[in-house]
Image (tube, rainbow, N blue to C red; front, side, top):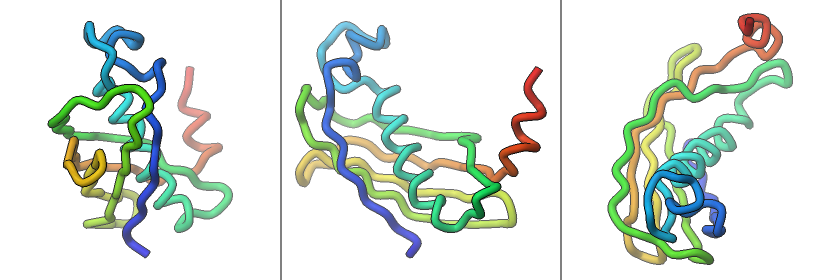
Length: 120
């Protein structure tokens, strides 16, 4: 299964006003990015061992339309390329039938213990 879809509901703490990324009570781009990354992480999780996880390495996002609090956002992510450690995703975000965002995203598969040892 190389695609995965998950629904999210916009909450008041995810607005641009609440997050400080804007002045309006609409879905903040950082919150949309988090939804997209989460959906991709969930898809990739089924391919990993219990000692592994994935971390976001890059994302290029287009946030195309506003969404108000309590709106249901449907995120669909698809693996488009995979190497031993890197996985590239194509992501789309919808509010009903309207495309409100798209992204290309790269995640890197890491060993949890090894990755955590890199922190200082």
